Amino acid sequence: MTVTKMSWRPTYRSSKFRNVYGKVTNREHCFDGVPITKNVHDNHFCAVNSKFVAVVTESSGGGSFMVIPVVQAGRLDSHYPKVCGHQGNVLDIKWNPFFENVIASCSEDTSVRVWEIPEGGLRRNMNEAVLELAGYDYKILIWNLEIGEPVKMIDCHHDVILSMSFNTDGSLLATSCKDKTLRVIEPRSGRVLQQASCKNHRVNRVVFLGNMKRLLTTGVSRWNTRQIALWDQEDLSMPIAEEDIDGLSGLLFPFYDADTHMLYLAGKGDGNIRYFEITTEKPYLQYLMEFRSPAPQKGLGVMPKHGLDVSACEVFRFYKLVTLKGLIEPISMIVPRRSDTYQEDIYPMTAGTEPALSASEWLSGIDRDPVLMSLKEGYQRPNQLVFKAPVKEKKSVVVNGIDLLENVPPRTENELLRMFFRQQDELKRLKEELTTKDVRIRQLELELNNLKNVSPNNV
Image (cartoon, rainbow, N blue to C red):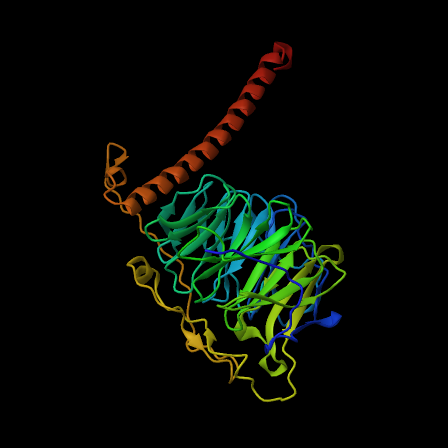
């Protein structure tokens, strides 16, 4: 396979997206007074859907994030309620694409928590999560949220996992890792189908490119320049194309729009956003234009397609975190058109909010493409789904203080995983109980010493 080395200097060709431009929202439609986190991790710290904007915030005594209704733009009150509960800094947040009031957060306390946000947003601080999931180093855990239990542990990485991306039908999982290896994995079995040793192009982020059977990675070249690479998902022996971007040091975040085949590149700490059009034929990556801004971005959230303004020919919308100003700034990517009618060529049928599979169907091995929807008549949910938290029933047969059911040898990998996590939870509970008892013992020892030091005349 031949690697195509490219330059991002514009070479114009016929494209309906050649003149796409970025439009910053007026200040009154921004979210102001937001205490954005100062955490230096390479994450977005922001998640958006058609109802809410969520952003990780600076806080003391644990991690927290804000959830703000999209329609409540403007300056926030200094006592605006937060989602609290983590014992460490919140590292990332992600909305459930099918239940728009459900959000997950992960933290330095090694837990992932799932929260259900009330309709209309928070009126007071939220501390109780619907679910709490455990995380472990160098492993990918797949949880079935219908039962609140892990169903698969993928253990093929030898260092910190930097990013991961599912393909369109959920049959493949691509990961980038600090061990300098790019992998394509069958997620239900954990089997590695393809892998590439990325010593020349050190991969940071990876994303599937819709149904093109291609992967896009961002990383650093051997000369320490920021770089992107295009890969064939069925042959990772070497990239199809590589393109140097610049010599800056901030991590490049890739955002891919499968409907328009446009790739957006935003560097952490940069003020600009570059965008390209991806094709199946050479030159594969076609530079289009660049949005420029003097304010550096801490992170970026992206509005789903059904939340865009189709009447304004808006094809993408970022929510930019500007830490120094405490500002969340929406940036709309617009295709300039003279007509006011619906532009079907830039709004094909797109992935909707109805799940194509249940968890049990996916686990059984079924693959299915997303359920598509049209944006022509505006967004209307086909049927209101209701998120149901799992209810666990504990069954036990206790003999001489031993739960016999808890000690039945596992027969399957899933049973082994469940037993492992139950043991981890029990160890955590016992450690907390031991710490409490140690504190009580020290208190009693101090009281005993005080009593011994009291003279008989004072008794």
